[in-house]
Amino acid sequence: MAKIIDGKKISQEIKDELKEKAASLQAQGKTGALAVIQVGEDPASSVYVRNKKNACAYIGIDSLAYELPEETTEEELLRLVAELNEKEQVKGILVQLPLPAHICEDKVIQAISPKKDVDGFHPQSVGAMTIGEPGFLSCTPAGIIQLLKRSQVEIEGKHCVVIGRSNIVGKPMALLMLRENATVTIAHSRTRNLAELCKQADILIVAIGKPRFIGAEYVKEGAVVIDVGIHRNENNKLCGDVRFEEVEPIASAITPVPGGVGPMTIAMLMSNCVQSIEEG
Ligand code: NAP
Image (tube, rainbow, N blue to C red):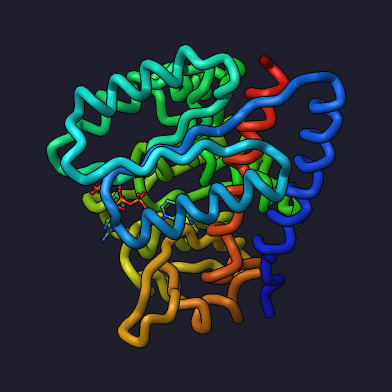
């Protein structure tokens, strides 16, 4: 029986710590707002945006909502980002992805001042993380590091296999595990003998984006399994990239979906916002 890594509980602990920190910063006259921009009305994005605003309210940070119509041009969006870069009170800028197809996401991400890049997606933030300089960390991978540390999972010297090499999850995840002194292997869609490779992992981090792809044949007895995937099944219930009921009896610890990695992403976004307010 694996230990269930409770992301809901750990994210709540982090949010409570941040609430205290935000209050003490406020007492020193240090305040600031998170600007959240949404273009169009994608229902999933609307839920994420609402959750981010609620998290700001909980912690005691102002949030400014910019809900722009689907037809917004790239130029208009870039102009708004440039205005927010200049606004003293705005300490974080978040552009909810995905953007409509006529807007280049990379261009918009690169327009955000690295000082306000609380999502940690700007090339400067990614570069700083790569060479171990201070900067904002990508929220989902940083949240997974917190999940492991706060669940007393030792990382140093362990073999970690990360499945997935996206810019927002797989690559930064691998770099952060490396920074924690794990020995890291990155697997992707061209990797040969995936199951054999995964079976060597002490810590298996699954960000493959395919519902219930990873079963018992991929997992070593006693491994720690982190499931980053979020999907809705045919009954509209949430599931991950891992077949939980098959893997849980083999693993020593595992994250559930929902209630594992998901809640950590917003907690780490809030952590980046508080860091930005602190740094002024
Ligand atoms: P993505 O951009 O689709 O990347 C998926 C990665 O998996 C790619 O690198 C791909 O390899 C690899 N892959 C696909 N099929 C494979 C296979 N058969 N064998 C081995 N590797 C394979 O997805 P993402 O944005 O990283 O997200 C991954 C999952 O995490 C999604 O379910 C997403 O919804 C979820 N997610 C959750 C959170 C959260 O807060 N919990 C945040 C972000 C994402 P190639 O590079 O070769 O194509």
